[in-house]
Length: 176
Ligand code: FEO
Image (tube, rainbow, N blue to C red; front, top):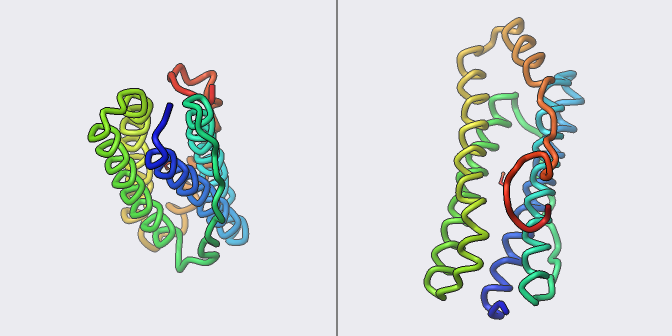
């Protein structure tokens, strides 16, 4: 059984993951309208990953005897100055999410809620990848600068990204 306080905190993180999906879907729309289909694809895949993260929280709360209470999702921005500007925001956002996961993990430890702590370890590791992949694209964009040909090459590379369903991932957690 989960405490009321922990349930509320997990509901909050579920909401943050849904907001992340909204943010990246909005960025996908921005890139579509900028004719950068590879970037749009990367964001669309990222949005699906965020929905998968949200469902892990949804399933975990249920499996611990809680009842999910969905909260309103804030509207994301809809426009950015450039691809680099969008990825600056992705990187900043993922750092913020890492902070939220760390705070949640600290709360689980403080409550001696070992099951929640164990569940959250998947996210602790995932955030390392999330920050790294956003930062890698951002660093590439900084190298490319105002070179249009370089931007199109990067766009082609990002068009290759595919969504890996949780079952094929080999990770362990609720939602699979
Ligand atoms: Fe669900 Fe991008 O962290």
